[in-house]
Length: 269
Image (cartoon, rainbow, N blue to C red; front, side, top):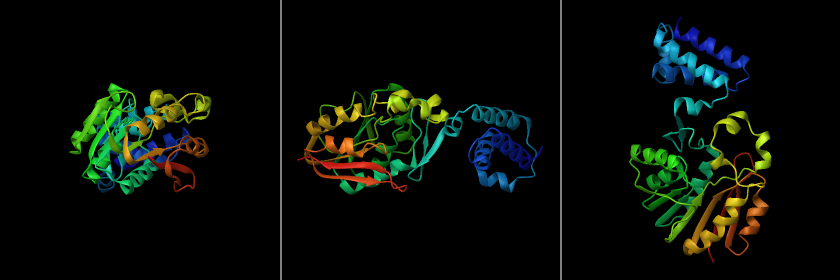
């Protein structure tokens, strides 16, 4: 079987299983199986698919059809034009979080804290995009191992701490993409998210607001005077999070490219 035939066969299997973007997914999985990029596949489309490649490709297709996210199969996801390592111990980076990066860069600050760093995409990106001293926290030691690996591979100077929310220090800027999915919404999530991404990083109580209730007052105690807080929020949480920030100044809710509320920004009084 040629690589082209294997690609078409994989695409058909994914289509029949109802997997979205079946062509792209088949390309990514086949490229991962042969340890090459997608451009190489097209340049060598008439090459024979050797047995080892076929074994890997077949396993990856089966995993994807069973609902495992492509990023957990390949172990990588691009974010802010950089490739990050991901495992089932961390959330898969979403493009919407790049709005948080842009807001944080506009706020600035010499010392930055990333709360609930997960795979470390926010802390690593801010360390590489600024000259700030960046600290990142997470309650999960497994997630911190992934984050530390990403920072090391990308040569980002980030200090990682295992703790709940904020350390006993002062910062100019606090950023966070915390868990904000309501437990009541669990049955409505896509199976790739519900069955494979870590619940600790997804859910925050019955209404999804539990972390904000703790983080916002903690940030008020931790930020330097006139420091900034930048949070990613759920699409239906702008009013609730805005109310929690009523004692702050310069409060702003920014929308994502889909027109949904996505980022809450506020400055300490």
